[in-house]
Length: 183
Image 1 (cartoon, rainbow, N blue to C red):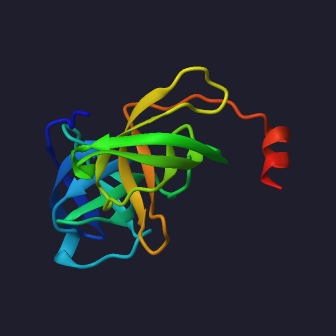
Image 2 (cartoon, rainbow, N blue to C red):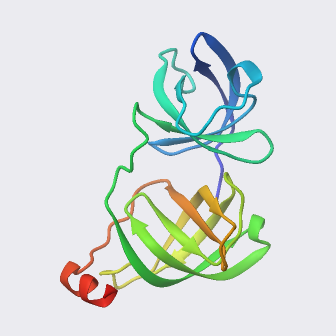
């Protein structure tokens, strides 16, 4: 998985503006690195405004998560809402990447076209890896780049919430069968 070269952006909270480095971007989420405006800790959900590289216009956004090493996630838009419906699944997967130090068996337990909840790996917010699995309703496996947007370390096995890098996923689920299997 490749990470695009970092670019400079501006992040504003109220009238205070701070520079940040764009580490990775999806259409709805930016992974930034730097100090938050005013050097202060801000709670998740705090309204912000950000520029995109090469643009002067400030876009509405919300702080989505704090990461390690001065990294943080910003959800673009005025409301931090999920852009795609999600379904509970239980699909075997293989996660691999430098941050995982090789390959790890995992399970996709929640899936949408824009991301997933993955059980069995432990990574910090902002961590990147590749996820290989066969989505429901598809006859072939997929290989997707992922960025961790939520880490749940207080459960065993650990879980991460991820957003997919580079596009969305299409899949289908037979809802009547899905409901019956969930009972």
